[in-house]
Length: 499
Image 1 (cartoon, helix red, strand yellow):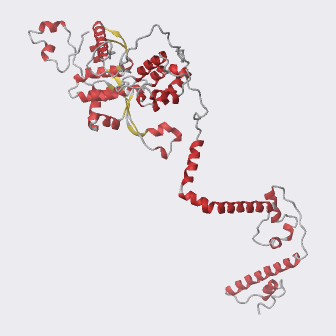
Image 2 (image 1 turned 180 degrees about the horizontal axis):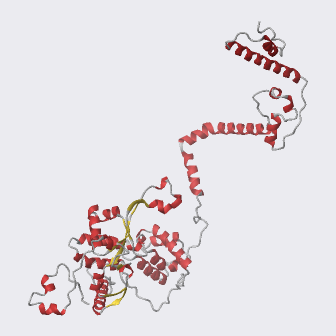
Image 3 (image 1 turned 60 degrees about the vertical axis):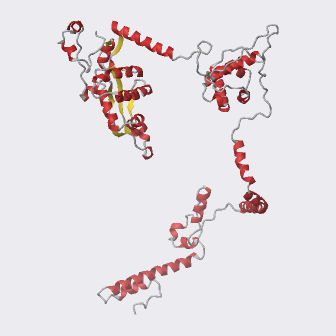
């Protein structure tokens, strides 16, 4: 299998073999067909693509840098767009990327049309394929389901791309592929591909070794070192070693203890300025002897604030590790301070509430209120409370319904046979208020007969008026007097109305 594919920059003489000088060399090398751009949209889908799936960003960038030579319009901007896509591959376990057009335009600093054109170049090169096409459909509706409401807003559905490796790149790199399409897998290398992969790994290793920093004791440099230069102290072998007051053993900590140490270290970092940008895990390991000895965050911050820090400190964790060892060896570190009674306790919010409550008591308005109005206001409030208490005690629990008319008048307006054995409205309302059954039975008063007679007279008068109104409105004036007299004779006092 050839090591590379002839691109668009290759000479036609190499392909046709018309040059007499190079005909011998090119005859031994098989000619590879020129890469054809994938311009059909049907071939740019994840189901129909000939490219295989990629999950690693560095592999996708390597494929993009190689394949960009096969497109006449692709260039550096295409590589930049591929790098943006590669930076988003870690967000999905399949490597799929959401094509956020506005965010990509802001990140690259180019126009929307340019971004869309170079995304099309990547599709034509077989480097990305469509998983889902963007649309105007509200993605928030599908996300919230039945809980979607007017307050959720609108957000269009973005295009989803899948980074892939075209077969031309696999062939050029010497990859052995099993399967076809998006589900194809890398299973090995050819001889040339293996040599190329080994060379690439060695090149990356040399680059990392070249950029690695060495300690000043091994390599001399003219630049000022940011490491602290520690003066050598001559050991006094005659004098015994000063016993340390700290725990020298670095025992194995459990995961909860490691987490607590890291949290304590982060508190110390907020108090000590030269520890802001340091790694909290490394600092927790360097401060482990002090933490195991019982030092608190407040005591650690006070101790570190007294240390002389170099002007250019490159590694605070290494500096602390060295200083703790040195001071522990020379017994310059005091034992763990005992927890004093004046140590600040955990605040649950009461101190802040007390501060807000006491803040307004030192203003002129508060002083004027205390001198002039507080005594009288408290006296008035006490009087109102006492009055309400007395009123509540004197209030009766009996239910007193309010009727629109007299109860007796309401009852007498009904036929006597319909309410003699029925409860009164007062009984009904009282029974409902006290949640009890309504009783039955009632005795008529002696004055009820007079009221019933009065109501019958009113009914007779109303009937007579209706007859007279009908007589006057009709065209026939001669109405039999017997009909009128029989109607008016009911009341006794309306006999001479017609005359």
